[in-house]
Image (cartoon, rainbow, N blue to C red; front, side, top):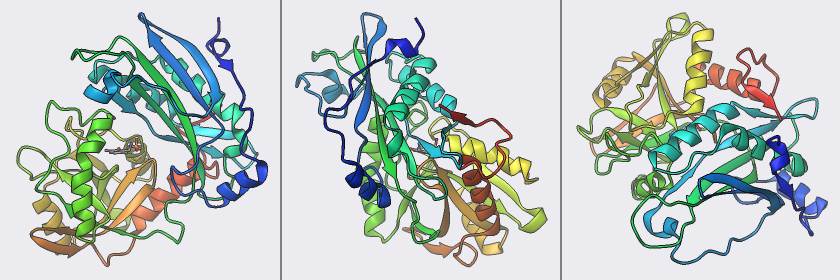
Length: 365
Ligand code: PMP
């Protein structure tokens, strides 16, 4: 049986009316509205089965379901983009499928085969294609695959049953009024992840653990938290739900540095893509440790000219200023830099089909 044939489809009896859908697509925001359907696949007795495309809706769950107590829960985030010819393409979906498997492994959960992950996305896009915003803008359809333990019981152990679900939500431009550099807060009180912990997996608990520091950042008038290493609070790891890049020098002498994959930061797919695109553009890229001291001094001497975060949601976010208990400093003139903008234009152009996809990252499903 082909993977596609394993899916049963139950269409929504009362989908969102076309006019209301158009209103939502005109101003979708992020994660506020969901398409008419979702995909569900169950794991039990050592196998995946019961793959369904069904109406989006609530889940009845036993209060003793293990995920509520011991938190075996992982997720992914990726986007589908409408192309100029009307087709719909995903960006590096295989990389998300592989990371989802690595996250599952780290949490002692069942691994969803990559073909099922990709087919679930194809199925949902097929049934909810009208929810993918039109080509030409910065809008997309955000896809949220996730999985949690469904076994019922209070014994602490890896569950024997899991549910995989896929939701889709139209997403507006991250910066609807133009790219605005963010002010970041260096968190020295809290850490996101420690060596040997779960930082390099996309697990729900990492996000729960990050919220208090994010709240603290907001109280300081900052938009995002920058996480430092757990041991010395000295090396920069990542920023909120974004990886970081530092631009040294400018013009044809510019080079990029990004924190190395320490085991406690998330290996972002945008990060990986930008490393490749920067090299294509002739910028040398180094993956290594970057200390807060190097960041501050580099900005002071003018050696560091631009800093930006990157992730699926925003693609590229320029960092304007850095705030911490030790004071604040501004990067360059606080405005988005040239290298930041060039890399952003290239990557968003590939995603929207206006730049050549020379690495074969788009997949029309
Ligand atoms: N770091 C964290 C902690 C994240 O949640 C994300 C978003 N997935 C990223 C980095 C960026 O990863 P990606 O480029 O794959 O979206």
